[in-house]
Structure formats: C-alpha cells, structure tokens
Length: 400
Image (cartoon, rainbow, N blue to C red; front, side, top):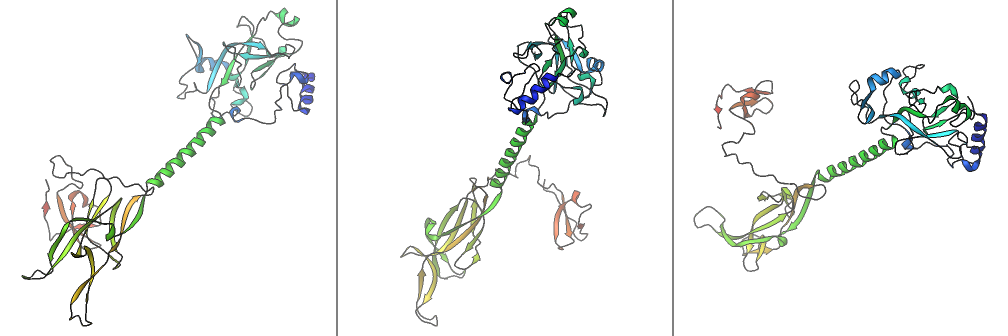
C-alpha cells in the first residue's frame, strides 16, 4: 500500500536537504537533517551471511533455545555465524515521536533501538528465490498471533522501523477491533564486521607491514667502513725488540703493539698508505665489537711509529735514519643498517660429549668433479650429488 502523502513529504524534504526517517513525518520540523546522499562505512556489511531457505529451516538448523532465549546455533554445517547474525526474538516496538502514530522503532529489552535487520533479498538463493528464513514477522501482543503484511504495515530493515498504514495503526479503531494489542517483531539482524572494521584492519595491516619492513631494513646487514690511524690506537705494554732475521747475531728493531676497537664485525683491514689489505690479528668480542691488533716498527726516542727508512746518501751506503709519522687504515665491518652491532651468539663447545656434529660423520673422502679437490663428506651425502667417491683414497674418519 503506497502512502502518497508520505512520498510527497520525501520529495518536499529533499528540497531542503532534510529527510523523513519514518512515515507520518509530514512537516519540515519533524524531519531530520540527513539528506540521504551518502552511505557510511559502518553501514556496509563486510561478511557473508548464510542462505536460509525457509522459516522451517531457520528454526530447525539455525536456531536453538536455552535459558537465555533463542540463539543462533554455534556450528552450522561447519560454519560459525554467531558473530555474524543474531536473532531478535519477539522484540517490542516503541512509537517514534512526530509520526502521527504511524512509525515504530524496534527496541531491545534495554530500550535501545535495533537496526540493521537482514532482508530475504540480502542472501538470495537464486535470481528469483529469496532467503525466506530472513522474513520479518510481526505478532500480536500474545506473541503467537501473526499480523499479516496485507494489513498495511511495512518494515525498513536498514533503520529498524515499522511503518503502519494510517487507517490501520496501533491504537486505531481497526487495530483495536482486531485485538492485536502491543505488537512484537522477530527477525535477524547483522552483527558482523562492516567496511569500517575491514578498512581499519587493512589500515592496521599496512601500518604493521610498514613497521615490519622498516624493522627488516633497519636490521639488515650493511657495510660500515671506519677510518682511523695510529694516532687513535692504544699502546699495549712497552716496545719490544724483534729480530729482523732468523740468523744468529741478526739485527734487532723495536716494535710496539697497538690496539683499536671498532663497533662492528670487522672482516677486512686496508692500509691506506700502501693501498693493500692487511692480515693481522683481530678478536671478535661478545659485545659485537672487533679488537684489532698490530705490531709496528717503533722509535723509542720520539715514541712514534717508523714509516720508512731513509739514507743520507743516494746509493744507500750512508747512514740510515728513520722517518716518523703515522699509518692510516680503513676497517670494513658488518653492522645492522640502523647502525647497531650484529649480535654475537654464545660459543658452541665441540668438546662436550653431548654435542651433535654440524655435519655428522663418519666421513669419506670424495673428489669434487668441478674443482678436482678431495674433500671429506658424510657417507649419507654421496648419493645423487656432483661428488664421486675416490677409489684411490678409501679412508673413513670417525670423529666420535
């Protein structure tokens, strides 16, 4: 039954960016300020609802009754919809002011307005068959006598508002004559996630991904060079004499042991004066630092390193004298990209009895087909690889 007066009120209200939310609101002062031009994120459903063929299937498969009332079954054919749909069992109606008694809101036991009801067309079975299990039913006050829809009432599932025909509304002569009393309503409402929830989750996922990416980049390995010279190095003990040749009566020269600490895992040391890699003693400490040691020729009189020796004659037959100065180096280290040091794990003691070998023996010497080298491999590795057992060397080494 079409309410022509209400339709005209909608058109009139739209002109003034106002909209009646319920039948019976015929004047601008009765209408809200919402124009109906937009849909909010929290109004868009984000989860799939089940298809319910009929009210009979609803009652037999999807609903159960306990001490707290009628509830959605926890597990329905392997799916849990308790957090997606909720059954409203014989909820009361409350008249909406300024609607001439034609519109009522569905309320819960606490008086809160219920909205977001599910319509049979929200989960169609086919293009023409609706999910009739979602049918909204209106009952008389006795909660058993149905009030058919042909009495002129309609229901706005989105707003949770029942619209009654002016000539057949609660309190009217026709209504009282039928003895319906205070009507109640039942049906399903949607309580699942909305676009707002999903949008928030996506936003949080993006933020988490960004954080994880930044953390991964910050903790990735980077190369950090440190430039230093003997001026920044610490002296260890006093200078000591070192024999220049291994022959008896050979000459001696004094050397000074120096140390320098770099905050990283140093894997290469370069002497800038000679532009070559220096092989020297380095200790990788548990703190992640590397302590570099060097023994350099030392002048006792001036307490400085000797860079080179010069002669007071061009043919190197004169008096030799030291040239003092400093050595410069670059220590190339592994660090984290954020500048922090790489953690050093505890030492694994291979001498303990319960230690499992990194590559378990016994070993067999085999020949690498690409390099020709004889290398030890566990017997279990021989099958299917590029290595062949060397028949000329058949030695088993048991490290037990």
